[in-house]
Image 1 (tube, rainbow, N blue to C red):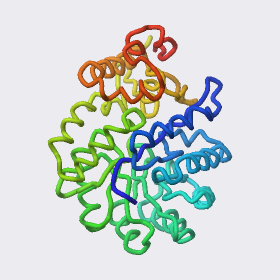
Image 2 (cartoon, one colour):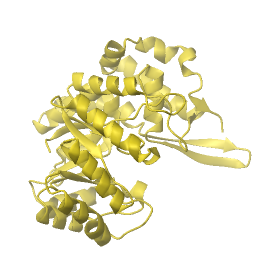
Image 3 (tube, rainbow, N blue to C red):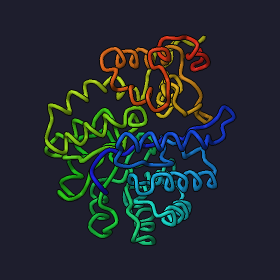
Length: 344
């Protein structure tokens, strides 16, 4: 896979929870127009756990068709069922995508050894011509393939040459670099860490598979390109401008219930899709069991967006231009905030 910025694309739904076909096409074209390296369809940001497999296959096929020859195309095909992952990878291969992303099996709790032998090796062996990107995110899956097993995969399977790293653990990433070698590509799966792990000499990440690239593909792509060229000062300017957005991937607030205080976490893609609705982009609601942010959480998001608009209006300018929306009005008119949160 090529170094750079890949967008973990959201899946736009209408209010009834059905796929917004026109919105999907607009989002793909927006990414391409803004110079994205590649697009990941049906990742967890795309709410793949809520898809029927027919929908899953359809979104992969549609994005593959829209982006063909314009940017690289990745299909999310992971599962907690190896047979399902095999079937999904086969479908993606028939759509001639450039790679598939496979998240570690969730909920079942396999060991690192089992993940390697009963999951990645099975799919990599069945489809030797398909590039496979392991996706390591133990905070979501409750399991983790360790760097030692990743290195064995990389040694034995030429079609496994990179990883999406979302452990948040810098020591784990350093081990990945140590065991997998300098030619192995590490992509950040955590927007807030892209700059840090690309500039860490013991990690040397080469890019990111990004959530907030849904909002700011142009500037995240520029930042990653500058980092790969060694322009850390230029990249830091963009990082500083984007930071309020990068911190929105998860929004945590303290709420008051009838029975006392509770911590409420609005996790990806809920804050992202809420922001996209606010800005006038196709996105729509999340699918259940995800719902809405709390009012307090929404105002954290709104304040961050207003900060970006006040200090660096160029960040949102491509959205205004492409989707023909007035960003200032979207952020300041309460009419556009209706129904975007609920009270505890």
